[in-house]
Length: 536
Length: 61
Image (cartoon, rainbow over all chains, first blue to last red; front, side):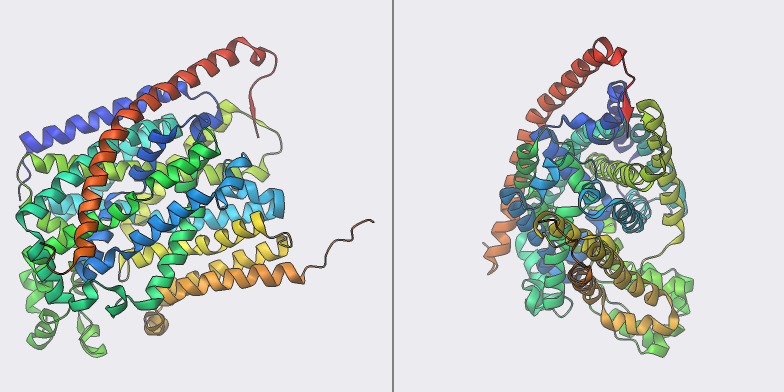
């Protein structure tokens, strides 16, 4: 391991100190709840670009995109292309985002109230928060995993690493809200970008394009370059990426928070179009790191196990695991063989592809640059966590608790409540991160949990903006059906009797099912509701 | 040079070049944006303190 406390530790310490000071200094500008939630709608284009890019790239992003590169080669970067295309087109045309920003709403459900009534606003808030919190619940643990692996710390320090990371983020987010988030995002964007670029150029120079291409050809064949030729991807994956990424651009609370914090609609749209290509970088750059990990350390899942654990795995099973494809260590085992492995051993083997990139970096990056890498990754993670905590917190305050406030609150009281909500989300993150373990691919988990609300909210938003016949019956149908499909799939995965069926369906099919169900719910519900009598 | 995969080769380099450029550009312009944002917020706060805010306390829904 190349982490040196005196050199790398100092670089990380200086970065953390600068971030905390910047985050805390701007809290004095927060006087109204609008300042806390949307930075008083004073954000301009370049700050918006920095903030959006920093928010949408965390350690979790780096881990799952590197995993995608490791397990699917260059073809694994396809979601980035879909996301960039969606963001560019939405920014260019103003599709949905123009009416949303023009409405002056602080959250998506606030817009829905105008069309579908108070109950739908409340319900939309519940679904957004449920899907969003389930989604971000794994961020902290994976961030802690990365830091432990790269620094060479024992995994027993994971819980402490998670807590320290969370407390630092929570302090400035609670005190300064969106203003602190924007200012620290800017600083974090700069540090993160320098780190990402330096490591990428080093990989291209030292590992080399030829070796990267040869590795992908050797392990993935044509499927490593073309998603349609890849058995892990294919059409269902591509369709889900197009649907999921378009819906995320339109409705993902942390993304639209930048639109809603923008000075005006044009500024918001410019932030979208000018940040769009970043989403290609967001997938391709760490994807390249994942491919480099495969090229340098290879696919050796059994190395994840301790000597004791390895001794308990029969030689025949060991042989099959060694011969497996990158990212699928248990794919060649029979049902009985897979069941014979202890759950902890199976989890470690499944995590091999996720942990490959940080393990590779821990030996590849020299002392001095390691500090820059850690600072960059901390920057990426802190900006993501702070924005996510604030975004879901704003929906809880604005839309879920809103209907229970009989009288208008003073700004002071409202800000206090928002601070308490952000703190509670922090506690949830810590507990969930320690208790929950993901089955299979991290990106598919994130997209599936996101689709609990992405499917219904995107349908609601499009119908709200462009379909005159849409009404509250349709909105209710879309929310219920859109959430039911992914929740059912996640539950089936955890129940032993249905786990096999859930796996055979796949997360992509479940995600597409959620979008179809939400659209059908909206159409059927809206058409079934009798039209109101209009006076001549 | 591209080893038969020119699409991915040029896309990777496009990412590196675009990202380097945007990092420098946004670092400079973003700093001005922050300065402007804080100045606007300060001015608005001062107006609120001295103007109509003395009659009715700020309310949030």
